Image (tube, rainbow, N blue to C red; front, side):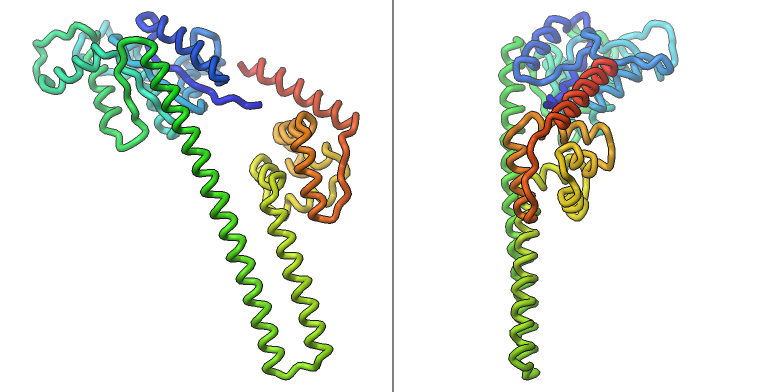
Length: 344
């Protein structure tokens, strides 16, 4: 099962102990941490090393930025010049990683050393004073980065910390709150979907009543009226059946995972004679998507149960797990694991 990927961005040497503790904390939650010192980043030989870091930052599910007293090395796009003075402006690799995540609207969490945050308040009152000396930072760019983060209208939660335990507590609370919010949104979407279905059913019933009224007003013969009633009952029953199928757990999963329409889902269900065949039809022979769908059916009995409940709605016989399907699913998962190791 896919795990949320958490990219940790910061300078290394001054914050390596914090990074190490954060790595263990993230893994303890069952998430996947991405840190450059662990070899989690696949570097491209055709581009500067930091470009690969920006790519990984933009592909993460969550982004954690730790700001300490060091601003960090220049980004490769910067023109190389003699060593920078305290007030020289330039973009660091850490800043560019942050900008990459922000441009993708990835949830961002900023951790700021308490001493640096305290000096940031001093900086705000002395921006034009180049004679002042700061004890906790090695570049004025750190203050400008903090300022850039705080002026953003959203996606910029910041927590000043003195001990790692404060980081752990804050991130655990933040991520738990985000998970709860996602569950609430999912529940609201389900309620909205149910309401939409009911409105659709009322619309169809209204259409049927309209036809009945027209038949009465035109004085239709009894046999014509009977035929109309049976036809409309059949039509409404079919619509009800399709609504039931559309709201089924397997339909929701397959349409979301394969990014297909309801019509394409129905076609795949009707044509498939095995789990493997359904995975291929639903995915359009996309190996990655087919792998995920078939792997789900092979590994989880509940998924197979939901699959056959959907087939029952369509008056189709159930499909049983076959040895050939299981072999295919195992092969596909092995390929996926091998590919993941190669990519990483």
